[in-house]
Image (cartoon, rainbow over all chains, first blue to last red; front, side):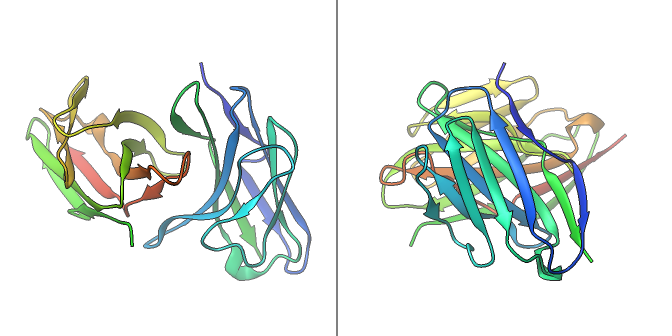
Length: 112
Length: 111
């Protein structure tokens, strides 16, 4: 059974704080993705990674960075959180073994 | 530019009232079309992948079909537990692993 886990379901942070969102997959997938989802805007791709230590910008990378030190783990970093980064953050992974993107449960982040 | 458009935005059905959701796409080269179901506050759950025109896939009351320009998700005799947002996404031949999503169709099934 495929599994993508995210470190927190709910998170509340203050403006200016550094925020880490962690994602782990157990499918040995090559690719991992970070999205944010907002009402009326749908799923938007922030960053993705094709391999360890590799990253590529998605559609809305501004204000975010990522880290992929191990194949199974992909971290999203908000260097200085702002209120407009309040959103639902979703992690996904994709690999040849499944030929499908599988999603984690999501992290609802609120920045005050 | 690649585009994925879902219609309608929202659909309200009586229990047992069958209907279809539409996903139309314009892409340079289709590698696969994906359907997901998303419940409020949760991550999308994978339903189907379709690869070529004429292909069909079924799961319980859901059936997905694909043509060269669009896909349909048919819901037969829906139950309240089928209430969710249904997302369509495409993967192109030059963006391996990467999906472009439509905005989704929110389905509410009332008893």
